[in-house]
Length: 435
Image (tube, rainbow, N blue to C red; front, side, top):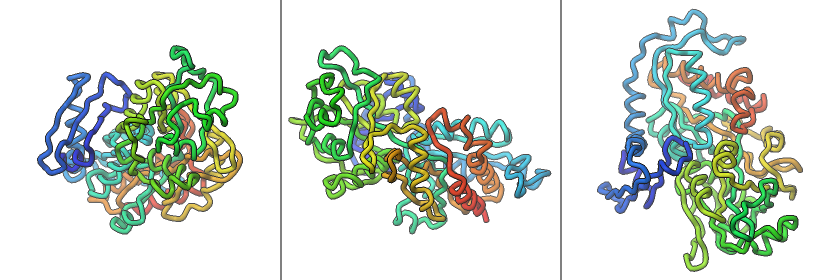
């Protein structure tokens, strides 16, 4: 299990606990893609080696939890099971569930789990920030009960895993962040000025066609800030892991830029355009924490990141700038809840019953373009009826507007609630778990 996780990358950067803390960085190198890889560890701090080991063996742990959790209190002992008017039972069996996956969904799952387990103290739940690709992979292999993902399973994945449900729990978005200074190199770029970016411009930044901040193609769409933009090289930062954020960001580029569509496409992982180190400076990072840290550490860098990181980390910790992104109608927008809801309203009626559907690049003057459902991936076949009962209850809790889909949960991370029609589709899918 460890070898499979490591051999996906030549270099892994693992950031501890999604805390966006550069002092907690360690680097693992896989020199060999066989099962006999050589690991070299470069520490910024020694004390957190346990996290790296924990991440590598997470699959084994999930398997143990999944297969050997002891049910001490059967759901049949609950006096009041769910009804059509009360969707949550009075009590639940004593067991442990595990979730892993999307960095974007991770803080939401933490919040939901903390409150759910207070309501049902017999239930224990583990959550982990490992990226959407890992969430998909682990639920496909039966290593966890819930795979968090900002992307639904592809047609090929779904055909190989017909029992896995793709259940939206909320709606989220990605933003553009940058670490920019004025021409003097000392004055931080004004936080009240948000640079405009189009999909073709971002494509040219990531394919090294535009390598200077003061390129006319940047200044021409930012006339009010043209005199403040420095003559400095751009450092694009990209995700190396299988990421729902990369899935949404590259989908936006592919939908609006013919070059990107033909040469790169979109996905959880893509083959990024080649960067000749003599003329460009592209950086790689693992996870949302990694991309925020990398952008925060490197002057004149730019990257994409999920909106959940905005308040505490992008602005609060690193003071990074945030851009406005051009939508399908040509307007430059920020991912406010209203702009995200405009995208939902424009596209959500087209969502099919299995809910595998993209909200990227919605039409409408106020529709923010990099938007998507946040999914819980769940196998409808569970090892015991009690596991199915607890799973159905937890996911129902997340979906109900007076519980997990209420503003008191969602607003802290700039998530938007599901429309009622989509909530019902999700509840329909939840209902078949264990049936």
